[in-house]
Image (cartoon, rainbow, N blue to C red; front, top):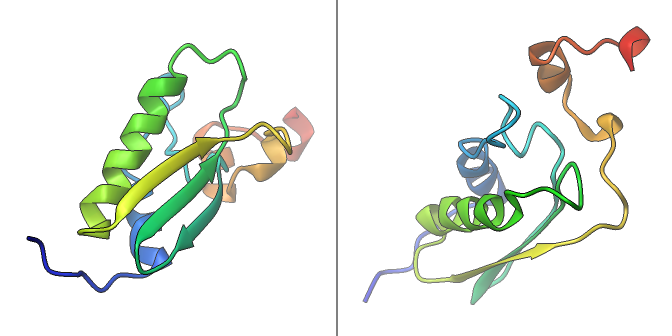
Length: 108
């Protein structure tokens, strides 16, 4: 049996920053794909979206997010829910992601 780990939402975010969309060289956190992280005594719940509802890598990306969170969550269960409301937009991206993709306000 694993011992409970002490971790925070920030620790989960650091783990999520290691997950990259295979088609975009930016991690899922900075892309703005993570909508919510809920941590309680028994589980970690993550609500996320994708840049497109027709993304062919949806299951793989959700699984990578789950595995990254599990690496931090210890004995707690991790669930990842894909949601489409609100829809993802460029506005959700961090300034670091915009710089990485060479997106300026004039370019969107």
